[in-house]
Image 1 (cartoon, rainbow, N blue to C red):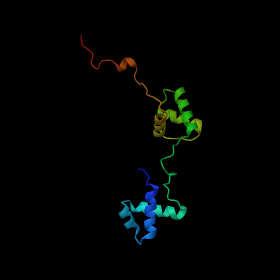
Image 2 (spheres, rainbow, N blue to C red):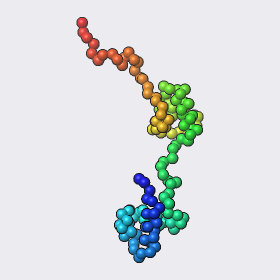
Image 3 (tube, one colour):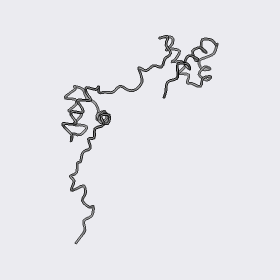
Length: 133
């Protein structure tokens, strides 16, 4: 969701300071959530700033750029390793553990293909029924 503009935030703040109106009524007038009005007023009281906060946007990655590079190198060297094996190898290199799901997300982020063929080629393409003679 996109943040509300500074002009819009200023209108809400001006209305709060100039009119004897409740926060709930302001929220209804501007078609926003009451919690938004409350958070905006709190932010203004504490910082004197009404710009959208960007320090909380998105989840921070578990691995930094250097650790992603280490993971890419591990995949290159151990291209047949499973996610669990990669997880263990990465733990040995960086000193902390991440989940298999995190490994999978980081591999996707790196745009590396790690598809394994667990069945030999001949067995995969054998017909399901054999003709009887």
